[in-house]
Every structure is written in structure tokens, then in C-alpha cells.
Image 1: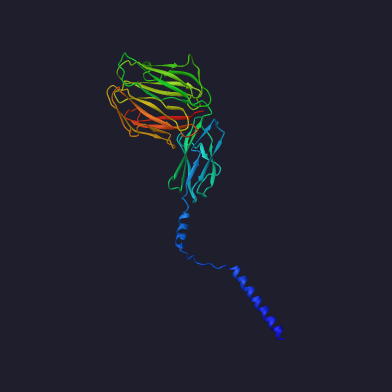
Image 2: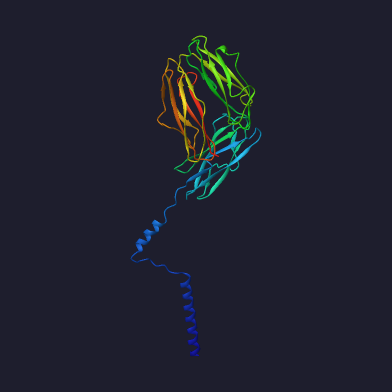
Length: 384
């Protein structure tokens, strides 16, 4: 009996030992690192695991162009927002601003428009911009995105369109300044087709309803007869001649009849023999086609066609150029005084870093009563 009791006690002891070993294996104990490098180990962990980098926005492409979309049709293009940082990127607002045709929303929000959303770190989000033309002429605008990226709180995408129709570009006024009676002065005017279709130039003449139609003449250069055809991105020229009958102010209107649906009767106002300051400026500036990273310089001639008064040119700036493609060669040139009968060459530079056509605007003010604010379009395209 005593032998059996001893065996039972031994079994109980073995069972108790096994349970204790099982508990030790299930709950491993931790020990403080008390070695000589313990403090260094803690510091190394802090240095090797830096805090997450802030959110950082990247929007692509930087500009988009819609080409050949007719009235009644629509076309969309994709914009991508990337968060290349390591913290959530908050998009607060996205909107489109039109530079042309105020009040007519032709560039509109498309599928997936990013109103008040979050882009997770190292991810991207796609959405659409839609072009639905309501007029035949080209449209320029800008997409603006506001985000929590403190280094770049506003991101922009330039938007341009090329008309599916013929589109005439020509000045709306010419000023001859002072010309002595019995003498003549001639100015050359560019007629440019920016649209996709060939433009028909039907007729050009001095309106008989003008105040002084007999003091002005117009001749088409580059076409032997009318009607003439102006292909896309091509020019014809008009030579306008002023022959005043006396020293008083003379005015007239030149009518350019063409196939542009928006400007079928383009009017150019002409005047001369005014004592006030008088601006005669070159037209829009085309820098041509450039390779990626290349630059080109062009000049805009600003002539004072008054024989008596100084011409003041001020507030010279480049606008609607989100990518900084265009710049003044001398950025400090914001004001210029041009003496009577003199001229000034305004130097501009284009540096292309995209594979798409880019258009901007040069804007300045003058003390010419008929040209208080002047706008010239700037254009550059990629080399083929």
C-alpha cells in the first residue's frame, strides 16, 4: 500500500512540473538590456527610424490641349494627382478658370472630380477635365488645385484648345500718330489662322461708313487675288497706308471678311494725326519650335508714333503662364518711356520644358488714350 502511495505522489509531482514548463513557454519573460551599449541601442533606434516625411503633391500633366472638338461634341483628358510624401495629402478644392469667353463654361469638371478628398501616401488619383465647346473660337484656361502641401499649396494645369474651325487673329486697331499733310505712312498687319481648317479671306476694304475713308488705303500682300486661302498656322499681310488731308485727327475702319465663324467681319480701327501719345506695337510673338530644355529670345517693338508727346509704358508683366515658360529678359523692366518718334525693343525669352504647345500673355499699360491696356499672345511649341 505504501508502495502505491509513493507512485501516486511521484505522478502528481511529474504532472505539476509539466504544467509549470508549459506556462513558462507560453509567456516568455523579458529582460532589461543592461549591457554596456544599452543606451546607445536606444539612440540608434531613434536615428534609424525618422518621422514620416510630410505630404507632397505632384500633378501631371502640367498642361493639356484639346484640338478639333466641334460645337455639340465633347472630349475629356485625364489629370493625375500623386502624393509622393509619406503623410496623407488633403485636397481642399479644385476649380477651372477661363481666360476667354467670360461666363461661358466650356471647360468643365469631369468624372472623379477631387472635391475635399484625401490621397494616401505613395498613391495616386485620376480624374477628368471635359471640353464642351459652345463657340467656334479657341479657349484658354487653368485648372487650380489647392492642397495641404505646405511647399506647394496651389498646383496649376494650363488648358488650351485649338478650334476645329478657321480662326482669325489680327489687330483691332492701328495708330499712325502724326503724319504731315501731303505725306504718307504705311504699316504692315498680320492676318493669322490659328484654327484647324483653312481660312477663306473673302475681301478687305476701307469701310465707306468711316469718318475719313479717303485718308486710308489697304492692300493685301501674299495673295494675287481674293478670295484667298490661309492655311493653319499661316499668315497673309495687309499694307495699310495713311495719307492725311490735313492736320486734324483722321479715323477709319478696315473690314476683313473671312470664314471664321466667330469673326466673319473683323474690324480694324485706324487713326492718325493725333497730338496725344501714340503706341505702335508689334503683334503676337511666336518663339517657334524648341527642343526640350532649349530657349529662344524674341523682341517686341514698341514705337511712339506721336511727333510731340512722350509715350509711357508701365505695368509690364507676363500672365497666364503657370509653368514659367516665358519671361522678360530684364525682369526689372516694368516701366519704359519712349520719346516722340522713337522706339523701344522689349526682350522676351521662352524656355521649353514640356512636349506640348504653351501659350501665355504679355500685358502692359500705356498713356495712349486708344491703347490704355495692351495684350500680346506668346506661343512656343515642341520640336518634332
